[in-house]
Length: 418
Image 1 (cartoon, rainbow, N blue to C red):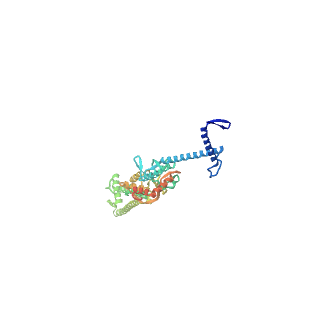
Image 2: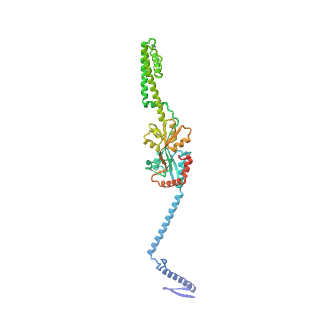
Image 3: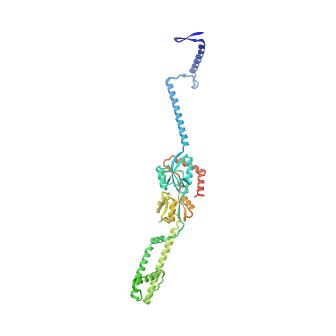
C-alpha cells in the first residue's frame, strides 16, 4: 500500500515499508542532534556546540601549526641522529717527535697519537693527518686554520695560547741538556783558548826574540870566530838550533870566545831561557785545565759562550734565546744529535723525555743526558682558536686521566715516570 506524505510543498508517494524505516532513521538523527546541542566536553557544562565560520578557521590554523611543529621536530631529530651516526672529518697536524709521534710507513704511531685516537673515538672524529717539519710551522698552521688540531708533544706556553686553544694538559715534562760523552780537548780548542787568554800574543813575541837572537849571534860569530861558517845560510841554521835548544831545554853547546865574561853571559841567557820555558809550560797547562773544566757541561749554567743545538720553534729555543745563549736550530732531534757527535755544537737543550728516549734507543752514540730537569712545562693538544672541539676534547682527556689510561700509555712507552 502506498501512503501520501507531504514534505513542504511537495507530495511524495513512497512505499509503506520504506517510509517506516526512514522514519526510524530520522528519529535517531533528531535524537543525536538534540543530545549534541545539550552536552559539551568543556568541564561537563552544557554549551552550544555549533561553531560559526570564524571559529572553524581558527581551529584549522591551530591544527596546521601543531602539525608543522611536529614535522620540524621530527626533521631535527633525524638530523641529530644523522650527525651522530656520521663521523666528523678534521685535518690534524702532526710533528714527528719520538716517542710521542713516530712515523711508520704511511701512518703515525706513538704516545700522543694513541691518546688522540682515544679522544677522537669519543668525539666521533675521523683524523686526516698532515705532517709539519717543526713546532713553529705546526702552531702557525693551527692558528690560521690550515689544520683544525695539532697532535704532538706541544708545550703549553703563554705566547702560543694567545693564538690557539689548548686542551687539558696530559703530560708533565721539562728541559735537560745532552752532551758529548767524550770530553777530550782538541788542538783547535787549545789554540782558541790560548788566543782568548792572550798567551798567543806573548808566544809570538818570544818567537820574534828567538829570530832576532839567531841573527845577532850569527853576525857576532862571523866577526869574532874565524872557524865559523862563512855562508849565512849555514850560520843561521846552526845558531837557530842553539837558540831554540837553549830556549826550550835550557841546554846549549857553544864555544866560549870571551872567557869568564862569556860564561856570565851564557848563565844569564840560561836563566832567561828557563823563565821562557816555565811561562810557556804554565800557560799551556792552565789553559788545558780551564778548557777541561769548561767543557764539562753539567747544567744550563755551563752553556754560556757556547753554541747550543735546539729544535726549531720549540720551547727550548725560546728559553735559550731569553737566556742570551747562542743557538743552532734543527728540525729533528736526530739532526741535532749528529751535529753534537761531529762537535758542531757544544750541547743540545731539549725536552727531557725526548732526549732520554733518543739516548735509550741509540746507545752506540757517544751522548749523555746530564743535569737535572729545569724549566718545567706541560704538553697539550691544540685547536684553532674558538674551536667547539676544545672543551669536549679536554673533558675526554680528564676522563682518561681519571681512569688511568694515560698513565698506562706513559708506562708502556717509558717504563717509568720520566
